[in-house]
Image (cartoon, rainbow, N blue to C red):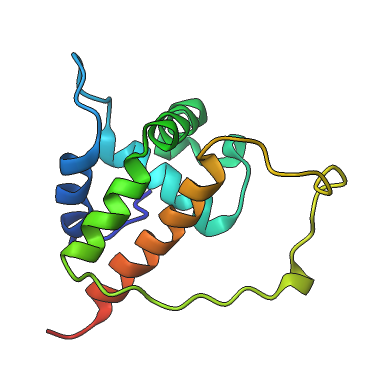
Length: 134
């Protein structure tokens, strides 16, 4: 299963390489794990619903949360803006979004929610830049 076209991945890859944390070991199947994150955010599904062809769901969830805590998603977003990757428009109709029963409280501290928003913006920007004729 391929979530991103090769042209889309060619836009994402240098942004990720510039912003991701560089540790002792390389991430396993970076593209596959990244595509699992994109799939999850495009479909609004739970982590466990990620198709098996995209690798273990926990690897994608773990990478997304770690990168959110380290500010990687914000870094990718800022780099995309610097490189003039056009951002598409998004419209959400609140009447079609169901909130959890416990959603009345304040948001918890942490960057996971903001990272999810940044991820959606970046995904739309890459998709818009690939579709546009040169």
